[in-house]
Image (cartoon, helix red, strand yellow):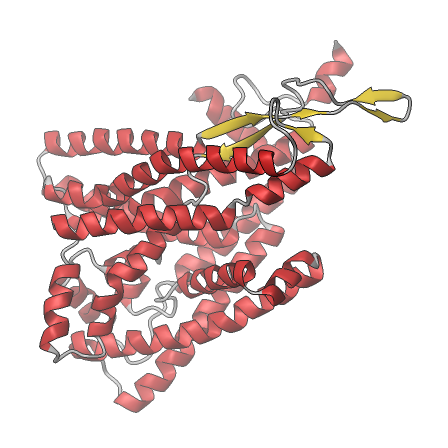
Length: 446
């Protein structure tokens, strides 16, 4: 641990990396400060008290976790950056289904700019719809916290929430371009971490010490399992035909340095299947906001709002498994991989190039997707299991599900980003043992 801390400190020896890290921290501080700026016409203290009394682990609790409590405070960032995530998912799906969007994907940078522009337009539309739903929810469930006439509150809240989300999109893009990357993911992860600390303190104060220590050990075991699951890959070996490059022969030999293999992730779909499944599971409760007096919707929502029930979790796990196969098929195209191998003179040993290679990759992908989907479903229902075992609903959210997957994924990606800067500047990687030393300096003195 001491060596790791020493290596972490030495990352600031690279001026460009130091500048990017400080710039990222500055923008994240702006995000956290903005989450405490309250919408006009809302009594934040009353709203937080009412929200705490109605917590039940539903969609509002999950969204509140993603935005670091901004939702329950009535902040200008109450919707967070989730509308942009939803818009990005929709555009990605359209890019796999519609020829016009597929053409834009193949146009390179210009096509990417157009797709990003479409994503921003769709973000505005989604944010306005969600802002309207947020207003309806406040007026039906938290009327005591409102201090402004209905019409004026509608107009100002929808406008400010839309502006707040677009500002977060801008912050995320600035972090990606000028910071250490993964701007959107970092904003979500910081919001989750901001909610983790008070949840941890509250849990420590409300349960016996031995039970709290047992919770921490269980959380550590689950975290290690998710890390192994996130980084796990199935490697398909690849050979490349010998070819002449100038006066030298290249290809035909597999070495550890060239890493000649196709790494297929056990979890190629990432956290998206859980997000899709949760969107469907939370739909009845969301529609209830627009039909508060309907007895049918009350019965339906009472079933779907109980996230610890057996029926809820069986259906939730089944949806995750289905969506894992669906999103893996969207994210990984065996035909494209086989075509790229053929163009570069590569082949899988014992497999003919072309369709046979594509079928082989598809077969391997199908086999590793099943255990990956089952493990992902198990991680998703872990908060419900923790809640049934006596963990508070607020702290149980971090025992699995979207929160834990996002935090671990962002941390690993951030470490990889820092590693890439270290290696580009001829430094050993962040996770190497020993001190971080310049390789050029070592070679000069040896």
